Amino acid sequence: MSKITDQLYVEYTFTVAPIEPWNDVLAAQLGTLGFESFMETEEGLLAYIQKDLDQEDLLKDLEILQSDHVDIAFAKAEIPPTNWNHEWESNFEAIMVDGRCEVRAPFHEKHVVDYDIVIEPKMSFGTGHHQTTYMMMEHLLELDFKNQKVLDMGSGTGVLAILAQMRGANAVDAVDIDTWCYENALENVERNKADKVTVILGGAEVLQDKFYDVIIANINRNILLVDIPTYSKCLSTGGLLLLSGFYEEDLEAIEAACLQAGLEYQGHRKKDNWIAPMFLKK
Image (tube, rainbow, N blue to C red; front, side, top):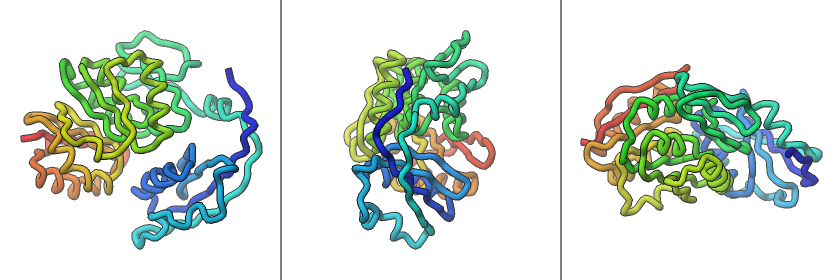
């Protein structure tokens, strides 16, 4: 049941140039300061934080604001109490992937499909609407996950981890550095009875001494370039690395990093200018 919150929020309006990949980096850093939800705009990002957590110098040490690679400006304004559930429900539509997998909210009509995933994103990334998540789901629908151990890195709502279990994986780690995403993924995993999915709060540092047959990482170019060597160390020989979160023009840099880490390019999907390549551990 929807309810109107009595909590006051402050809306930050960020202009970001260039937007990619910096919007995602900005959102990740804001999440560590207590920002709860984000919405992409044509110019950058809207970010929301509870009024009692907002401080005058809140952003003074934010690393991205000191970067020479991106220009960021912002303004903020207090917003009145809002029925967030209603706002979300009015903007979230169910999606169908390859006619086999539907991602829907609890209030959407259920259809007969091979894979029915019920997600309540609460503004977390990963409903399948974004091109990168959609392409990752296409990858997962084509691969055989029977008896595989899978890592979903930057798991957001947990939708890819849930689909990996539905496709036969016998163990899935869903890892995200954002507390909001972590808590949301826990709820969605329980909602979909994905008992083989373990949700973990953290970044690449939590992967020490872990090994996987398939690794899914839908993050952004800069983080991927740093973490690809770690993914390779965690990947079994003959295992697959599925990447997304970046544009086609970034593929050369991603492929070079993967090659150096012992990963062989297998091809990629493309949707608009976003791509999702696949690599094989030699």
